[in-house]
Image: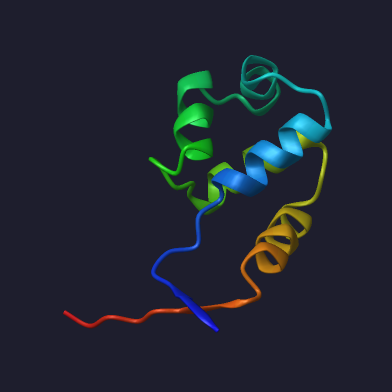
Length: 85
C-alpha cells in the first residue's frame, strides 16, 4: 500500500467542479470564497479548513459528508505516513 503524508482536496475538488460544469469563478460566487483561493486548493497549494469544506459543499450543492466521502474514496489505497517531531 502506498504512503502519503497529506490528504489533499485538489483533484477531488476540481473533478467535482468540472462535473457540474462550474468555472472557478462561479464556484467562488456560490461558496462566498475567492476564485484564487479555489485555484490554490485545486493545485494543492492551500488546504481548506472545515468551515471552507462546508462553504465549498454548499456551493457544489452537496453535503459536507459527501465531499469527505469523495476524499475517502480518493485516498482509500493510501496509508497516511505519520511523522513525529
